[in-house]
Image 1: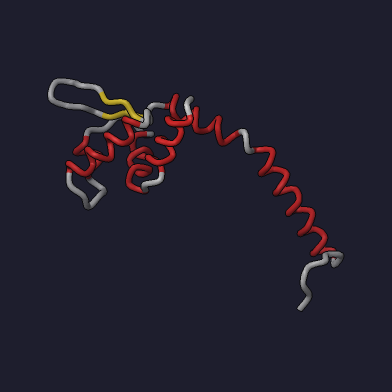
Image 2: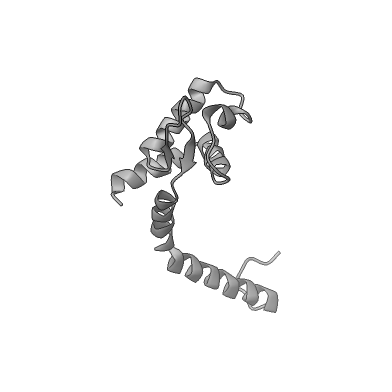
Length: 115
C-alpha cells in the first residue's frame, strides 16, 4: 500500500459520517437512499461521502440496472489494520509499564505524588 493511499484512507476515516457509512456497509451492500436514512443530509452529500470512500479504496460501487449499490472493500481495511499492527509492540510495552507503575502505587512503593 502506498503512503498516498494510506493518507487518503485515514482522511476518509476522519469524518464521522463516513465511518458510520462504513459501519452500515459492514452489514452488507446498500444504495445511496439506504445509506442516507440515518443522516440529516441530502442525497448529494451522501454521494460525495461515498465518492471520498471510493477514491480511498474503502468501498466499491457496482451497477445493477438503475442502482449503484456500495459495498465495503475488506482488502483496504486489512491494509489499514496491517499498518496499525506494526505499532502493537509499542502499545504493549506502554501498557506493561503502566501496569507496573499501578502495581507500585497499590503496593505503596510508588514515587507518585502523595496528598
